[in-house]
Image (cartoon, rainbow, N blue to C red; front, side):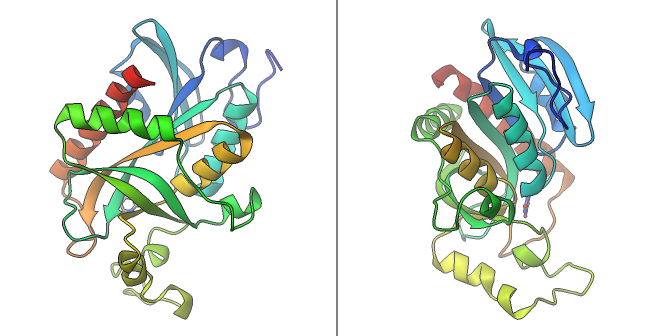
Length: 253
Ligand code: URA
């Protein structure tokens, strides 16, 4: 499959020669923001939610590809990148904290994800754990420590829906939930889950099943015990912090 493109990403193996690590933001607009931290960057493709830029850090070639929102599109990105020879997957995302004491602007390193998504169930049975790679967690941990940012390590939850699956009140039906979803936030909080996001469980499950490595670092946009909506300032600042720490972690990977 050297020059043959994959179904969605519009990338070929030739373009990705000597690249074994990919940074995975959800938002395609975050791709150029991450690329600003690399040298010799080049846009390779931008199809649907999948925006790919290649660049270098200290002479090492790194790919950045956005996954879009949620497990289904993240699963396509990881599947096709694995087919193209990528081996290390680092998600750079945002999250809503559910534990008191975690503040907007803090970082979370996800050690494993509660599989509330649907996509990972197509890849492995629900008993299979969605866990991050140990060496990649350690690299993120070192970079976060060095940065001086406040960070937390622990289990996060990946939901397919942003509103119902994360028990939000600011929805069209003012927080109406089916029985299966009611009090889920309280239950996860009681299980010491740190936060909600939407892609880690799918990416961790895929990587572990395929014998590849994945990890995830998240910027906290809101604490769901108090807020549902971040300020523009928090959004910008948190996005910058999570990108900087993820980039620094490359030194340990
Ligand atoms: N991403 C999510 O999935 N939930 C949040 O609350 C914030 C970012």
